[in-house]
Image 1 (cartoon, rainbow, N blue to C red):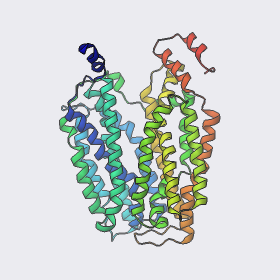
Image 2: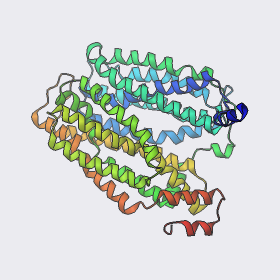
Image 3: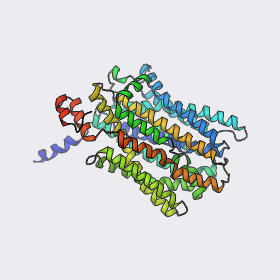
Length: 467
């Protein structure tokens, strides 16, 4: 009897190919990576305006840098594929990035104070390009190395779960601590301290992990730009969903002005930390909730519902105002839950579209589909960030660390945080409602057909509508 009771438990165990130190170092790497990612994506704009760079110039720098960010991933993917390194395919790049990213980050936040605006702008543009290239060096290999560490899918999923946990913790720590540090010790000293922590957490994987398994060479090849374009126009659901994401970013200015809202409208840098804290828990919970909801409700329905609620809450937030801070925080908490749930679903939509593409064309092109997702995410970040800074410049935003904003500028910061994002958000939602018709239950049928479990004729009969 004792043996029979133990058998089911053993079936649940993961037959690890990796050691505990390898798995822990893999997750820990993302702790440091997110320190640098949040540092740049959430605070670089604030640093630039504190240094006296006009908002419109910040927008131009941001656009140039993000466009480069969007195109250098496939370039580096080719380099990784072609490079023949003696000490591994991915680990050498991770070792290199462990020192390049901190160096580039410190360079970015060490702009001389007593130089012209032009020199400051050139310094940051060059620094951002160096930082982004350094980050790309790690971004492709850190995901790919998991596939070479183990050929056990369950173990690989566990590695990615560790990635999500450490990423969440690393990002949260930066959002909480950095706004409390830089006003007292300065930006450069703060970034140096953060960089030390980043190096400590990113360093172990380069020496603890082992590359054991490699997929076939043809599966490693990174898609070229023309492959992405050709595939996109053959996959209507992916085309519509990607277009909707890009459209939604056109007036998505809330992220660009959130730090300025905290400082100038709510009362100080500490509000950046407060907003980060109150938004973090709902985001974390939404990851769990979304995984359960998709088992019972079509993900398209969930995504559209979350988008509609977020639009409605934006209107409510505008009329409620930011003067009532308790009400403002309550709305932030509720919105974070819906935004987080929608965010979790994004990668699932891409996977669904990849299955649709396979069903329609017979072409197994998950790598191309996810490359399009990455490109779209970076392009939307470029558009929304630049649009927000250009608009700030138009409404008279005063740059400088001790600048005083006019009542008109404060009002527009609030409008950009609440109402302006609703414009393109509503258009994007309509595009999905009337254009995106790929349902989860049909994707399940397509997956069975793609796997050879049912015939094409059986699949056509089981689908809810013709595709």
